[in-house]
Length: 568
Ligand code: NOJ
Image 1 (cartoon, rainbow, N blue to C red):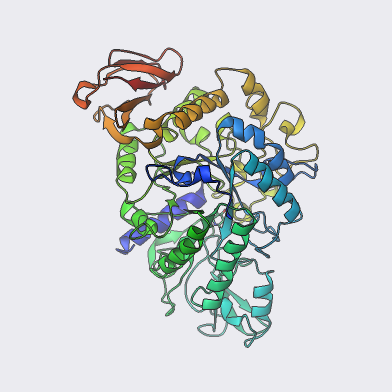
Image 2 (image 1 turned 45 degrees about the vertical axis):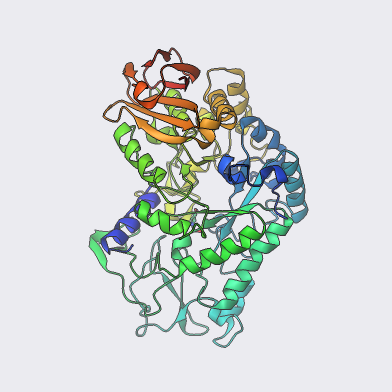
């Protein structure tokens, strides 16, 4: 995990210490099923970082037409919904997470018409489109902020957080930005400071102002009408700040990668008011049968439950990042985390990587069995009860490839924090489509270099190899879509004291599936003790290599996977 992710961990730990802690595109076939399941509960989501997915005009940056050209690939893979990281007009300081117009497409990615084509082509294939909604802040080039900073009496002044300094040259309090330096920037035009949790180019919106709320809610309505089926809400926990601006406590002596004090974000994150906003956004989403996914860095499941809301009236899919923090192949730790999330008050959401977190291929790989371990991880998060969100390239075993020299870094935090924090370029490299130049991503110069592994790990090569990571992903996804026990079955852990094999049963009515995952580099044999669960033997549905079952005993090769149907 990179330093940013570990800062987020620090942030949540600190909160614990403080004791706080379409017209949507949905077709009728995706409405609630006979048993009350919503379309997003059976869907497999796939995150696309648009800069890096497919470049249709060969300018080195991916675009919407590129995504459209890959819809057949995604359909064939088994994807039901794509979450596209921000593609709105933006100065790209934070690669789109600094939005200067919420109701358009950045020319670098195409046009609104390109979006319409993407939406209609996706609809033909029954693929939903999820946009990334940057709710906490805008770009400093957004017209709202330009007006806000123009004078103390401007119409949009109170749309952002402006305050006097404590004294000459002194910011209003000690809050530091997650991306380094003070969280306040002085503006000499009006002699006040504005607040930014992230970069100074990302001023925080003032969600206490009802006009902000109305304008932002309208943005979601606008996109639902245009065919978007939901949003991934960015940085929800930073929506509100303590109006009294109390100084944050210092967690411990020392400095972080950016040379700042190590603070507990007690007064500027996770304020209870944010839940009112989530309830409001959910009401609007419900009118379009849309889904809200949350970037929710929670300390524990109790906190995750708050994001579902009492009566499940906030986010349908708050991501469980605690799962991504089990950073070793430890059955005990996964068991603990799965059980916790399985007991949450809403439908679980599993991720193993994203554009802010080092790729799972390296986090779990041992350098020798990486492909096998990638299959093991796929078998894990794609067979649990809940909705999985894949990250582009996981399915072909893409590797985190961070820059080796500071001058090559594109992500600004990697330059400020070098060498401790190398930024997030490593997990954002171009998708590897084939073994031609630039991995078939672009005929121009890609905005980030293509990892050397593209020669072996790419869609074209792996499609020809029945033992590839890609083919394994396809098989698991196919099984997941067609097997009711995997879709809706209860989760029951098996062999809970086994230190090497993670084993569980998914049962739906009288249908059961067992999953056995060998997290060790030695062969393992496990007796599933199915009798006690009302089943007898297991019959293979999908297994790697020689992993197999005899009766209710499963033999697993090193890092082997066995998924079997259990019979009565
Ligand atoms: C979380 C996003 O995932 C990250 O990439 C971005 O830098 C920050 N929020 C700020 O929007």
